Image 1 (tube, rainbow, N blue to C red):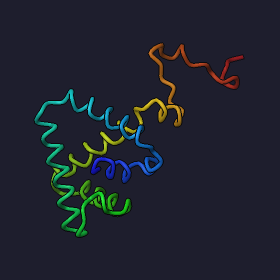
Image 2: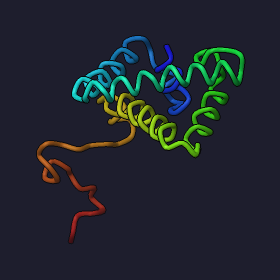
Image 3: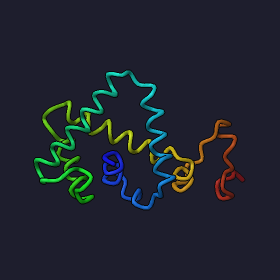
Length: 132
């Protein structure tokens, strides 16, 4: 719930995702976290707890109950904190949100991402770019 609230604040387009797509996003993030040291995962979990606490202290409600604008503003404020750990926390969770959303094949296609394991030879140049 909290992770989805963070994703929605960072990527407004995520409000159109259905339950199956949210599961896909979460699986991508879980796989990425599985390769990280346990200490990094603990730090991320603590940062999420901190986000929830700050939201409750500042707004009187949990992070997931804040509006998208309030969540975005909270993250933006923490990303400019004098405390390096807070800035790192925001950038870490932001990176995971972007990875989870844009690593999906459907998202890659929707933004025109066409990378291939075959490299540049897999790309077909538009007619206007073919040398004459």
